[in-house]
Amino acid sequence: MIGHKLILKMGNPILREVSSPFSKDEILSEPSKELVKKMWEVMEEAGGIGLAAPQIGILKQLAVIKLDSNSERYENIEDSEEFVIFNPELEILDETKQGFWEGCLSVPGLRGYVERPRKLKISYLNEQAEEKELIVEDFLATVFQHELDHLFGFLYVDRLKSNKDLIFENEGSKISEDKILD
Image (cartoon, rainbow, N blue to C red; front, top):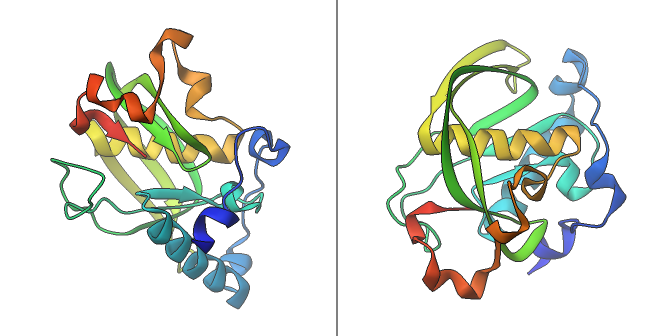
């Protein structure tokens, strides 16, 4: 699988860097359109539901997210639209924490129980460099926080309360499948 080979793994220093924002001209450029296309392909091939540009070595503020109810890896999730997020800003709308067993294409083989705020407002630029706002909650809010963390040098393992909340995927029978995020 080529997608997995392109994805940087925990320990690569690029994953700990803060990404730069795109200018509107950059967003509208052909290289950015190709980057978005490549990210969708890599994410799909790797079986993920989100991917951030730093995960493929590009230190720019871009993430793609798409929940798929037909996914073999995820049970009980609803389809979402395709989100292409440039230069995001997050505002927490509900501090109430919710927890899921998160996984990450950059941290293969492990899952960690992470609690995050349940409702957010995301301000961002879309593929046409238009300003957009989106309110997300529940599982989708967790997915957004997980992916956008990558743009600021964080991995989900940084959000664990304890290393006791980190397990190997193959121990997954001990956790609820509908609480797994990747």
